[in-house]
Amino acid sequence: MTAGQLTAPLPPHHAAAPHDCLARNDWICGEYLSSRSQILWDAVVQHLQITVVSVVIGLAVALPLAIVARRWRWAAGPVLGVTTVLYTIPSLAMFSLLLPVYGLSATLVVAGLVLYSLTLLVRNILAGLRAVPEDTRQAARGMGYGPVRLLLAVELPLALPAAMAGLRIATVSAVSLVTVGAIVGYGGLGNLIYSGMNTYFKAQVLTASVLCVVIAIAADLVLLLAQRLLTPWTRAVRA
Image 1: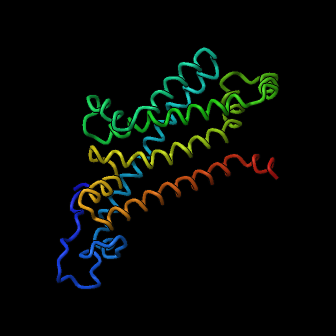
Image 2 (image 1 turned 180 degrees about the horizontal axis):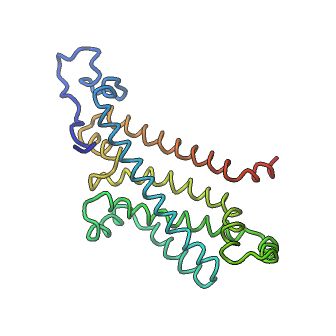
Image 3 (image 1 turned 30 degrees about the horizontal axis):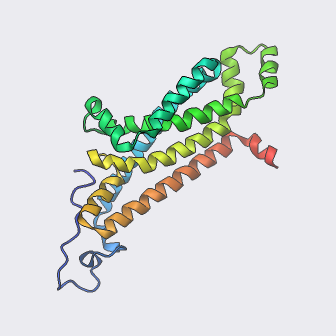
């Protein structure tokens, strides 16, 4: 059973008890939370799964693209141009274009979010790589660092602050865009928002929307903490 099923409000009736917030169809209703807790949990889990998978795949694709764009200047234009064009495609149109390939599945939503994340991730990773001082690169080469070791031990660590900034933006963006997946039945909390709006189920719409905001804020804070733990030298510079 999907998160969008069995979520319609109880039919309001004139004999409803004054304390029955479901029957009154209130925006804030504790009864909704207690009676639909499993549905809410399933929707949150699906929302998180699609978000995490999309961002991880997007990062795995964006990293080599940024490295290629940094290594060969002629590749930067096409890489940035294509990823920018992908970001300008409206979400409904993007899902429609991917539909013949992936069908009505969670993979369709993941693929769309991956394509959207590339612009944010590639640009920030590339900016971080370009910001590495040339003197630092020359010093590393003078110490015998080859191209791969230079990339892994010097360039990527120094590019990490910019990359993490892009990752934070891409993650928050993915959290919001997952809701659009409700059009194919794989939108996490978006399923509840969509069905709640169709039935004007106030408590469901508000609760699912608030949970989306909470997930976005929590994800951003977690990544911010990770960024500070991974880049302690940036705190020393600010101090």
